[in-house]
Image 1 (cartoon, helix red, strand yellow):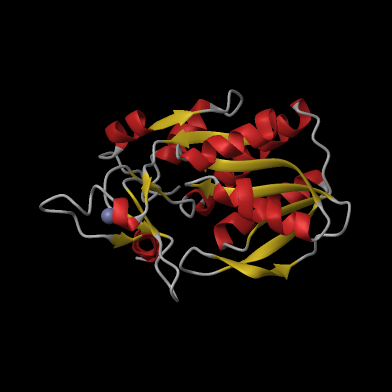
Image 2 (cartoon, protein in one colour; image 1 turned 120 degrees about the vertical axis):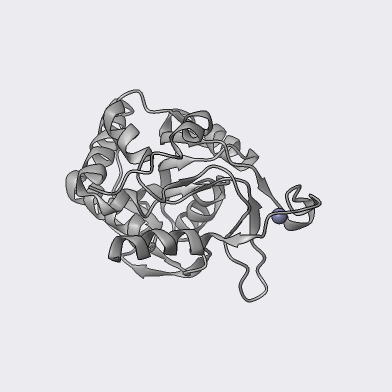
Length: 240
Ligand SMILES: [Zn+2]
């Protein structure tokens, strides 16, 4: 079992709401207590500024990697997504997601369980999406479920992934994530999909453009931490 971080328990409860009515609460509670999954207070850069693309500043960070260290957590999540797919009678051919290793693990499990194929969009280690498919394909007239582990701002499942699918002639029929943030883009995605948008949990995350970031403008502002450093810390702990 992944390590449990007792100290962050209290702040987690104020930042996180369980949205899914069907997932066993016991398991969600265990997931949320996994070390390195939630950083409820801080100053994080996501994605990391890279080759002229400037990342946003976040006051809270949710990282999907620790969840996928446990096969039991992945199984529980995938089973819950299947309950939602059945309830909403969502029929799809392909699952489309960023090629982030932790996300791919969830998608491969969901594809196996549903008999769907999977396709992955290039994903840069800094957290940016690339422009090309790295695995699988999107065919014309295919029904596609878009998936991501975490949507901080809603743009991935609300805009970027659907645009790519539509460019290749596919049709986006639904979207799913483990954790959704609370930024305006997430509300847009909720409007776009209605009940065809699944999230297990919702996390209060304020997302700022660097120039508007209130944390930066504080007198003794906390240093900006690239999100990859937090992901890296968790993975290093696992190995030690
Ligand atoms: Zn800032």
